[in-house]
Image 1 (cartoon, rainbow, N blue to C red):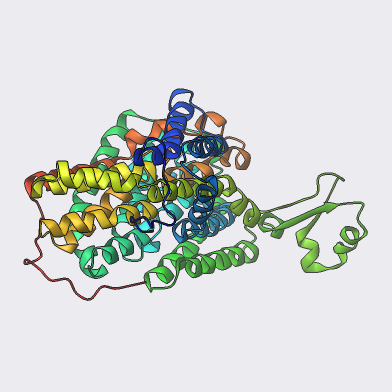
Image 2 (tube, helix red, strand yellow):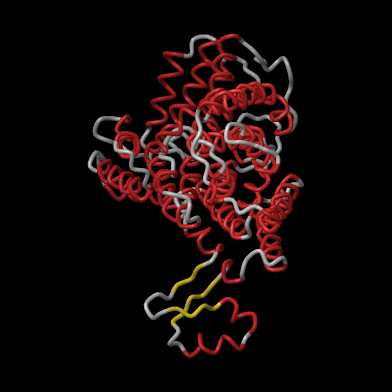
Length: 506
């Protein structure tokens, strides 16, 4: 994306450039009312909100509505949205496949064996989620996998669902911010003319300070904020422990990603290994991974019993109930509502960008607020927060605000490493805090399927997106660290202090 507007394709609104924010502003208001005030955690409901906002915004367009519609379609084809969507689909299939292989039961067994109780579980979950996200480079994928796998295990041993979900999101924030292979890390470095290795090395001191405070917070709050233990969720015994074999599947994903392979390739190898382990060790039936539920009246379905491999995948059902099922199917399909929502939000952001809304925000901050180095860095933090509130995909938010960060930083001679760290930390953190944020909704989408997967998991255990934001401790501490750094000068570097190496590019 670019923040500049071309005269031939620029949008003009009644009410000026600020009116270009109407679709997103309407959606945010809708999300606050739906999730926060009414307590309705429904992704499909949010889709209606953004659709209505896009319709309302159309009535403020000066001139042809065709330009508005064309830009809307252009926004939906942005690569940043496609990247997030692909990560969700692959991560969803992977998480579901190791889940049917008993990985959650294995985690419950391990927690009981080493006496990790309800009070300690959120803090441990934060550390593990942070390690996974740092290894595979996708906070969204981590939010999906941990919510589908670790979250039910923690709830089973009595951890608070809200605190546990916050710990998962905090771990995702840590990895999204620090991982060398994270898309936000790459974008922040490239847009600020800094090398990725130098950026990662320079931001560790900020991330670790926030992580230490977050870990302490989960330890302290975990002592007083607990749920109810679900004894029926743990069967114990050797069979339950066998599910831990899928730690090998997770290790394959991490190692492959760290070695520089694309995240799609890394997770694909994880899926392949998890399927093999499930079948070879008898952890699940083939039909639990993929099943064609065909009508028992079909002659082809009746003949499948004679075919060993296909017969294991074809399940006869009553007429009218035919469908496709299994972990590969449910892992992907469960994210379809979120995919639609993200495409529409990115499209609304494109409308605001082409309508001059982002330019108006940047000009105001440049001319009225950023009058000193301290104020400049403070506005960088707050500016990324504002944009991230409107664009719920953190990579898209980074791309939108990056030119402003670069312009302002150069005005005050701020080093590219410092600019990249401010840009990445706040977009990474806030993408998992706002109730309508992409990272939070990714985890929430995985959580909504848990009552169907576990008899003991009740609807009351599903966390409303509006209730978790105070407990994403690492996200809040990371923002606080950079606000404090802006005011005190902690870690501040100027261009003359250190020269950036050649920029690493994707």
